[in-house]
Length: 528
Image (cartoon, rainbow, N blue to C red; front, side):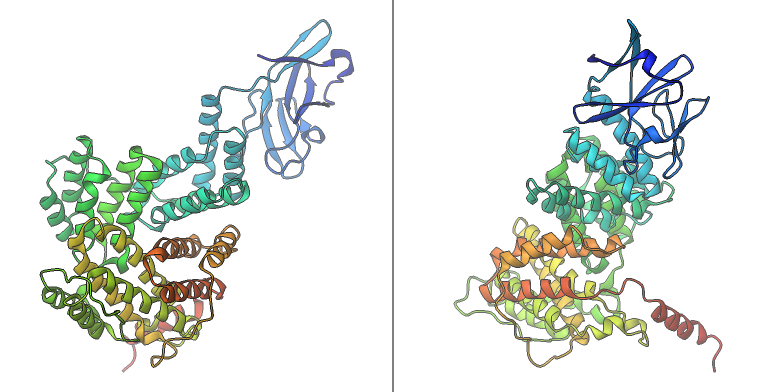
């Protein structure tokens, strides 16, 4: 305890608080009848002086600015907002004494997490950031709030893993690189918690099976192939019970993720993200990210079954069985190939060039595509569903590429499927280019300056939808990670494409397009 002498008892009139200062603290002291209360004078909502509020006979204090109400006995907020800090008091020798001793850290953390869960369930962004600020000033770190938010949301994703989990490693990398810039660090972490809150908002728990069957890599992959979530999770449960870590599970998930061209590349992107989450936050979070990933793999759309990509399996069978050695010739992919020609080029190139050379050529064209994107298509509304294109159609080729190179370097057997799927990305976007004849010219771009500009803008992006801001973050981090693996010209094009994405206006809601397409589809049932 740390008792300080605050004010003479006789100077404190009933119902009329006095404010004292102790270090950074402003403490309001209030007498109601025979009871004396001491509490933080700054309202935890927006800092207005609570000494100007009103306390009633039930010891409920009202802040007049926004009508927040606090129980003076314990500081609890009656409206599920931030709690008010209160201080023990005593009267000795006609003086009122206040205990200003800091509370135990574990007690503070437990209370802050309880408050954060309330803010999380409401997706109250302002309150979440205030609580993160308290974690910072209490020197509790920012990792535990993220672990807690994962724990509050992991079973609320009906179809498994979402971008809210998938973007965590990128936001954490940005936060770690923010150094002593606390504003930016908390901004990036707030994106994680806000996105998890948004994707799980008012969702029930979509429970996972509790069955256990012996862990078997082949059985897991077959269950994913059958889209049998319960079978996949049952064997995963046993693996987790045995204490298998992500290093043991990751190769199996990666093979399952590339067993089809599926989920618009998210199968591998999310698998890569789980590794980043576990590496940064520890193995304790593994059950809460591996199960959603297994569910996602079972629900993901198998795009290699739709006409545009139906020949994917055919081209995969044509890949040479042995890896080509380094070729002295620089490998250049022709610009603006459609999907099947892009896959054919990939197969032919793998016969003469090592996988990483093919990878670099594909990334080069993915960057060119992004530079040549006809952005008018993003804003058009009188278009068929097949032409619903946005920046995200282009950014996923880069985030998928970064996930691919990270995994294929550890598991070289993943290169053929991964490179063909990257070719599908490059080819599918050819229809949305402003010019399919010549790659766009780019000015000199300093990669480090581009990265610094992007990371700064990410801390104050102004976008209301987390799904959009997370793609800015994921794409920027993917470009930075891949850059050392690429040639100078590809790096320049990659960061020029990234800056074009960041500088472009983004339409967040396509009202008229959606209505137009609804009328077109439904109207076919009524028109001759």
